[in-house]
Image 1 (cartoon, rainbow, N blue to C red):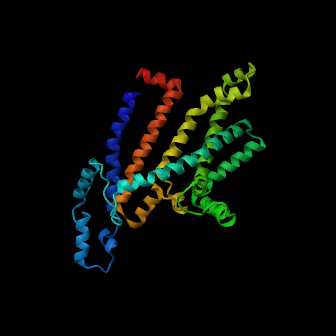
Image 2 (cartoon, rainbow, N blue to C red):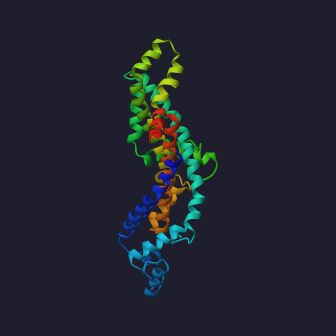
Image 3 (cartoon, rainbow, N blue to C red):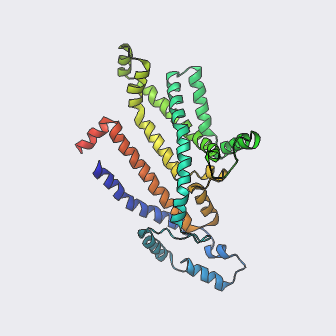
Length: 310
């Protein structure tokens, strides 16, 4: 397992190189002059040339990319064109807020999604199963921005239960966490329902039931244990996307996290901020997926056996 983790971490280097290259090419292919957007159209040509030289835009794209890789090798993500602050420091400051939001959303979506998925599988074809299927389909179909706005309108503007936006204590966290948990819970419901239904149809479940084992023991030791791998996969993917920054949710609720920081960088064409957020997001996503793979190793004996054979 240790050698596997080291290999995955080593593979992160070419992945980052590929991500930075693609992102750099796409950003540089955007129309317009970044120096002109920084100083405005009324600025003199001397000022524009000075800004272009200061940010390195006077060099060709190859030299700019090589210079960025040198900075990246030193652990430097550059400075924001607009604030002048260190991008890595800003990401480190905002990342804990995104962590809080991600954990809060998963605390809602994971138990809700698994319990509802089990209920839908055990009540398949009945009124309860159909209702859960309809609600999960609605949760997947409704756009996140619409559900976030509706949650804000109802629970903040109408009922005055929570503040509409901002970053602070748990009262500020409830609404964005609920909005963010809806699509994750809906996905988890459908995956759990499908996997649990497949496990329930297997012969060993009928054997356990025929032996008179308690239903709770069958659900925990036999059904959940054999259905856990796909469920863990969905949880890991959702959690990784949240840590990368829930752009829409953080922007609507004014939550000072990575997602909102990324959106601000895109709106301002702040290239160092955009590149820094992309790189940070890539590292986070790879690390979360690595953690999920390690969990596979300990949760499924078949995976342990396969790893030992290698």
